[in-house]
Image 1: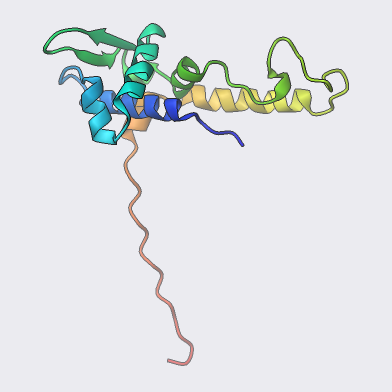
Image 2 (image 1 turned 60 degrees about the vertical axis):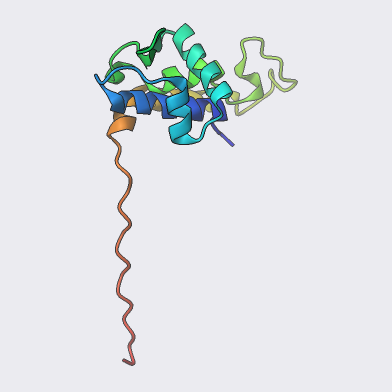
Length: 150
């Protein structure tokens, strides 16, 4: 099953948090971790990885912390996921080495690679700004139940 790692989840949560913060300054790893109940040590590593990938900026000092390295509409979900987990692997043969035993005879390799490309394209089109603009769904009203013998 295609599934994001916990680190990628945390990275996306932090990126959304920083986007919603806007121009109000930086956020510390501790602030983000406490707000979302994320282990501080793990979040600090995730944030540093995002800094190394050029997605976040880190500032030291009393007003220090993390902020987006560029506007949220220029950072895709794919940027964040691949910044944390590396290239998206869909099948065992997704690597350049092609080390799968069935590589030469596989009849689904190419179609599955196309599926992977579609997924990456969709993740690449969705930005952190879109994640931040998403509002929680409002529970739908329950439909009235009609009783025929009432």
